[in-house]
Length: 532
Image (cartoon, rainbow, N blue to C red; front, side):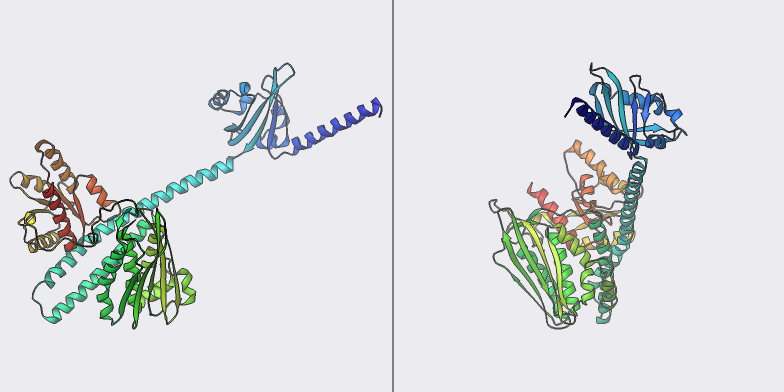
């Protein structure tokens, strides 16, 4: 090959490269600008004209800084691009010919000659205005959703409080009246009324539980628990309901399940209560079986599989896939026929999943259903348990120890019906009781009388329960004494107990008042103080 031929080939190759660069330059979907050593635009592509809305005459020799606001140009110069040589993903704003501002993502590279002098730069610009608008809309949507969720939580908390207050009066009066001498007809009427009131309370609790779970506000406790004892006690408690329908309730527990595991006894019991009570409700003859079997065991975890088997009405095949959803047609039809909220299974599913498990169902319409679920419990085989045999399930003895006899109880409650109920419940425990209607009256009374326990409502006129508690705690810093204060309130949302404890109270009982829970809370706290 001659020298002329080689030169010709080189020229052809250079020409092809230039042509390729020109095609890429002109047809790039990004705006490309080239500046000289004085930072003036000397070359650009069609997309640059379109993006900036400028003609060739407007762009030629245009100082790059004129594309930016003074503040934005100072920010870009402060990045030190000329010293670094190049910089990519610069998120900035430029001004178009019509004065509108657009968001861009820019990559800039400095151009140098053989002597390493800066002779200009090349910039590649992407219009991200629409992307920024979408991001802004997403942020706004997130804020709107959070505001809506907060509003829902506030609404539920308000409605829960407002409904629980009269429910406390209804259930309290029914209980107190059932303790009196009644005719059989009167007693039957009151029992029906009490069942209806408890069903209403269950509906409220189901709605709140589902809302908490969906909002991620249900916290799964990690405590030492006795799984076999929980199963036995739930089954024993519901066996009365089964006997009333002439149904057998039987249960088996795998002896390989460790006596002590780590989990949430309250939530496990809630799942069992829902599934077993449903099984009894939908079974008209035969039996309901409950089984617990260990699936696997390691030094850290224990997987237990549970089954609740009934011989009831079964579930139509078309409803099996949606049985754990909220308010499906399957729930609506059964709720109309058998009662209930249609929320129980949805709550079970969320709770089981929060306990690292799964739940599913097999069913034959007209023959019965089998609900199965697994839970992964914590397992600590090398740690000695502090949980005494049976202590997790045993309530405090009904026999009053000496140190809890003749207790003096102060009740702060502004609702006169609820105040009357609280007083009568406490009197039945054999304790002395006095009642006031607000926190200020609590403080005034403490100046002249002493009490062992204060049952403190929160929302009261003049001075609320939290404010009164904080005053008492401040004064106790001077005296060194400590008054037992128990929140007795209709606020029963997630975190309410913790909020009252953080405010200085020692215990918490929600309304409607469960007499045994109130009794246990008082005796437990007084016993703890006595032992100290």
